[in-house]
Length: 263
Image (cartoon, rainbow, N blue to C red; front, side, top):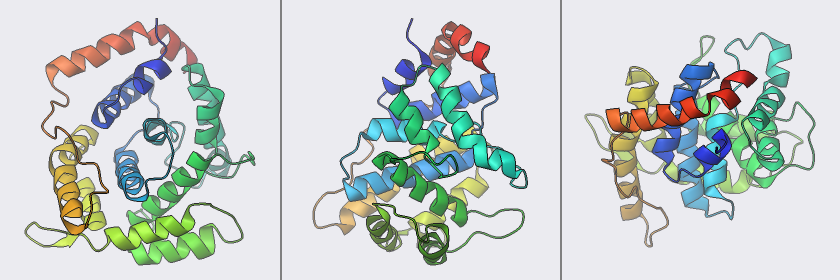
């Protein structure tokens, strides 16, 4: 029987990966909310923009799972400092290899794990930048230019991240993409607006896959003199349909001894 790690890594479609993790979270109560989808979509856009030589399948999967032991209470500093390591340990019980788990552990720097994996540097940038864009109970979300300043001069002050410069270039570029609706807005603002307007995780995933990705990829390709972005091949593929849901739940049920016993 394949492990959960083999199952999700062998699934090439990002939307299907999201659906798999959604149902895993329902069965095992791992952390998975709309912010994970939000950050993973920023990561997808960044990978397409930068063309960095990494395994996109691996890092996008890591993005969906690396916060699996995150907690909502930012005041619990002990858990804030350990959730990435706890998550990496949990993922190892699902069959993920040492390098994958290390990439997830290094999404932040609290565990002191070194040397850092290049994929971890990417996840760190997306996680911190994406988090600053969204509203929190204690503050409203920052504008992208404000978030970049905080990312570079506060969060990563005196720290080396090999992709910081290219990430700044990416944000400055994506901010030039205007998405058209009742009110024109930048691509990142539109991504956040869909999050706030979507009722639940499943609807947010569908709105991203069916509405956002086809439009933003088309606008980006039209804006570039040569094609840098990979468009969604089939934006109307069924998500959360009865057939795909049954398939995923069947696989998770067959894996439950390896999943639920390690909660």
